[in-house]
Length: 115
Image (cartoon, rainbow, N blue to C red):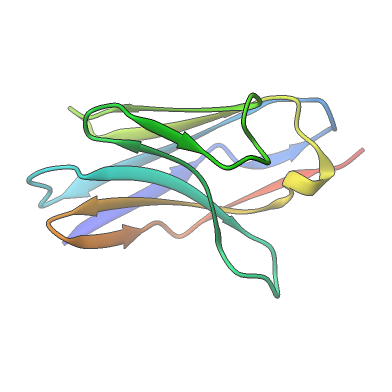
């Protein structure tokens, strides 16, 4: 059983910053990758950023240069530092963990960018 718990979402003005955290617990033997995705109601869930167990990162074009993903494999925890936020970044953000050939998801945290 693996559990992921996100935190750090909220309301922020355009141009502001937020830091999301996701703590994983349970039977985790190795980490293939951890990632953040986001979803707007009625749309598909889109990958925002990912980081492998070895530290290789990947970002979607829409957030490149504004968001930074990092992780602490010993905990394990993954973070998403979001800067220069735009109204289009408004969504529910989900973290995920790939381990043992399976993908586990958190419950999501709402991020709203509005003045």
